[in-house]
Image (cartoon, rainbow, N blue to C red; front, side, top):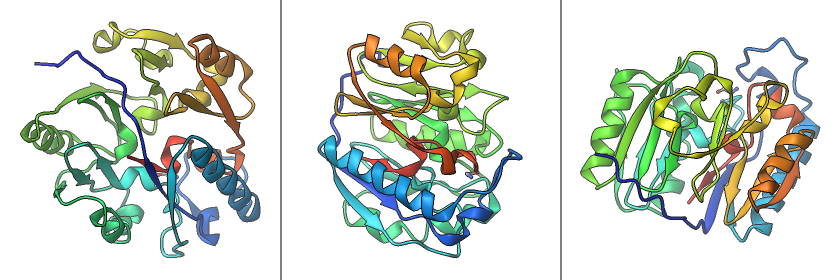
Length: 262
Ligand code: GLY
């Protein structure tokens, strides 16, 4: 049974990883030009500054040339108030990213769980609302991975809710919970009964990329260049911080993918 209370949380830290030169080989569904490495580094620095402005201590991991997508640390683990859960990425080229973040997470968590094959899950598919975690069944997250995740969450007094999806890379490509019952939502999810109880902030198809915005301690990071979405978030009473993510977007990356916040 879902616990409908969704008390507002507070983050103290974030983990990020510097983009590597092979970011140009990052997985992508788009036919856009390749990311510019130097520009990606600059944008990553601005992202770190924004997290610091929101009061977070930012742990910056070094670039790792073995993994082109490794700057997208969010996918590697689910960090909850009660435990950390390592994922098992559905993309083969990303499997090794768990091993290279393990020690850093172990520095902060005594209780650590892990999703095991044949379960696959990437935490970009998981949206936290208080003690409830919505889990998108995407091409990267299978039912077995979602079921394992739900069992672990329940063991610690939390819960998980599977969500069917077809159009997006990850669940949070098209949805962001920005606290106080506000849900930023794109077309694919508008008719989903499991989201009816939220105050929905509908992000237009033209600005769909900006549905991946990030609440951090009562401010919201929003990708630069999406004025209607920025105004929508501000209408909910939040200060926004716009960040240029053009280079990450070229390989299907968004603002949330770039950090683990806890
Ligand atoms: N390029 C981000 C991802 O596909 O995981």
